[in-house]
Each structure stands twice: as structure tokens, then as C-alpha cells.
Image 1 (cartoon, helix red, strand yellow):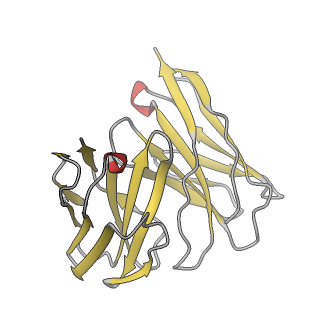
Image 2: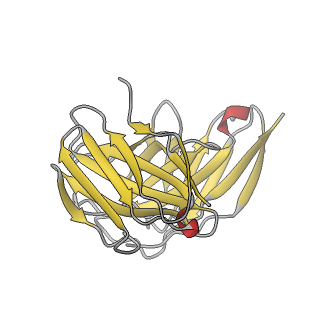
Length: 111
Length: 113
């Protein structure tokens, strides 16, 4: 599986947009970019995923660069409840492909 | 929808004892995953099942660990004998076979003394 690189930690003011970057320069053509988050003491939670087009859902937006070597997860209006570790994962499209969690980005939203 | 259910939520046991962790996946899901999370190693996939059949157990640390899925609504992860280094949070997750979203349970915090 392709590896991802994320900053260790980030801060964001409540109400502002949180932009979490991820590098995946070795991604291959059939691999998707997934984002999960883990709030303290809870199981990871799926956020969003995409292949090459930008995606948006009720939780976040995912912007993937044209060369697909990097992406950004955007939380448009961060709240204190968004404080969590955010994982960017690259996974193939086959059913047997696994999610490999890295160390993620610890996002701290402050008042 | 009750989500993925794990039991017990907390387990404290002595070294050498057998430990059994349980998981009930979301109804209709036919893929089930067992993960372990520690501060040192992060979140690791131990084993996963598809249609009750183990597909990949390459993450199982050693023979002391075993997992079963006797039917679509129940799975167990057993450690025998347990050791202090097995102390971790164990998560179970489920998904549709061809789905991309894994739904995680609340985890079982295991402490082996």
C-alpha cells in the first residue's frame, strides 16, 4: 500500500476552517484516499473518501490535487467536538485491500 | 442501528490467564475486522473475515492469539495465555463486503498484570 505523510499536530480556532494536509506521492491509479478520525477513547470514525474528484459530505470536504499526490481534508467550521486524531489512508479498490492506519494528525480545536 | 457491539468494555486479568473478547457486527455486514491499538504501535489490523471466513491473519502477533467467527453475527478474539505486553485497546469493525466504510465498535480495554 502507498504510504501517507501527515503533520503530527495542528491547531484550529473554533468556527474557523480546519485544513488537514496529506501527502501520498506514491499513490497508484486504483487507490483511493480515505479519511478517518478518532476522538479520544472512541473507535475510529469514517469521514470521507475519494479517487480523483473533490468530494463533499455532511462532515467534510476532500480536495485531491490533479496529480493525486496530495490531498486536503477540510472541516469548514471546526467545533470543539472535532478535536481528534485524523488519519489519511490510501487503499486499493479490491475487497481484500486493508486499511493501514499511520500516526495521523492530532487536531486541537480551541475556543 | 446499535452499531458494532463489543464486550467486555474493560478487562483486567493476570498474566497467564485466558482472555476472550467478543464482537457483534452490524447486521447485514459481512466483513469483520479485529484491530489492536497501543501507544507504541498505533492501530494495527490483526485479522479480518469475509463471510465468516478468515481472509488475512498476518497481523496476529503469535500463536497465543486466535480468532473465530462461527456465524455472521458473532466473533471472538482469544488470547491464551495472556501476557502484560498484550495490554491494549482492541477494536472490532465491520463493513459490507465491497464497501469502503468500516464501522468501529467502542473497543475493549485490556490490562494484563
